[in-house]
Length: 336
Length: 287
Image 1: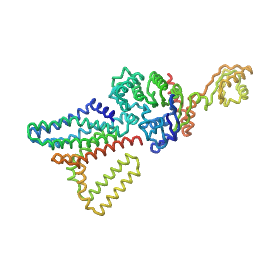
Image 2: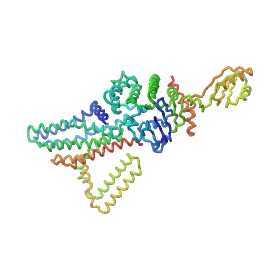
Image 3: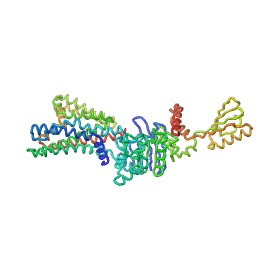
Image 4: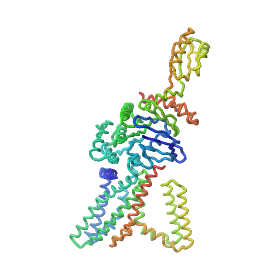
């Protein structure tokens, strides 16, 4: 449906998109994930014909977006980061203009307007001026605009930014619903969101594509280590001795907790963390020392994301800790 | 294109702009008609048009200041770029809407000569010829305003610059009598024009080499001509200023000459500035 090859975009001397190539099939929801400033918006603007590229090509359904822009654009509905709304119009007037510009006429136009108004649930505000609408409703009007003309591909740039948790859930449901009948590409810097809705994830950092796979497969290909935390009545020396025979354990940290117990944190590169914890359990049981606490920490997509995006640029390694903190904050907010 | 046209018209008539524009134009023409045709009992309606043409300094910016600047400010230009429309269609749609808004008061004005002709001898060909010239000149000024609006996202700035440009054009004939008519004055003025052109090219294409190249070549040509035959430049600057005046060409019609070259000039100015508007919008895609 969409194929991007060797796409490069410079803003003056600044390299925003660096030799990006990928292709997207029909159907499914694709998540476009990356930290702020990774080149997501630039890429989306190029895909939708709003921006030229320095080099490379983009075809939408076989039409080149640069040379056959009109037929290519007919296949796309785009919601930019800031919904492009005429504030002194009502949603209905606005949708009528967009529909006409997309070449819809007469009865088809009326029917489609009704259809998208229902789809994004803006029936109550259809006659109000857009300037008086809340951010959530404006976002929906923006999505409705993208849906007009029944395009095959719907591209949404950060559709949930600035919405309250309830609105975020509603927009996510809408995206999921759209994914059943359209190809949906949406960008986000919030991982849990992408994880929750997408069939496939593209991770982009510093203008480069660094991963493109299904969420489960990304998790499985664990680039980050999982870890096991446990508390035991064995002494530190005993723990070290018990674990020395287990080659799947790659790291070990021990603390004496003060009441005669030892808490440990070990990391493993094994794909099957349960097998590791099972061996661990029987190793301690066999030696007659009780495990008082055992906690598994599987590498999440979050860890992979952070590792991927950070490791792709050595210069930003120093910012690691702050970036991580922010990401977690964002995440807990949206999950709430 | 029709979608853009309809949408623009709706917004002009939803807001006050179309009414303010029409009211200003009708008021000044009505006032002129009262002074010349009723009070002084002159039968030439074209004098009224000549008298009223100054109103374009004010009313053109009222219409054109928001035409593209507002799209930029509201970020709705992104929508226009992503819709299956070419930039040319967008600009032409917007310009057609401006012409419609302009034609409505003109249609009302076009009744005046007919009404007056019932009460006396009115030479209608000159009246309507001048009215057509007013339309063409207005169209050219609207195109200039559209282009100036495409350069900024600040409506106020667009309006201010448009007023300055039209005012300069209005007075350029009177001013031409005061500017230096010596060869050296002309050379300096031409050099300034060349640099302005270079700046425009640089802004639109972001191609410094092209801009500097054009500047250098044109400056070179001017210098060569200046050295070879400086007499050619004598009086050239005032002549250019007279030639560039859109308003001066209206006066040819008012004095009863249907000047085809003026028609061509108005149409060329319109086409040129619409072309520049398209380029200015396209440029945003290539930054």
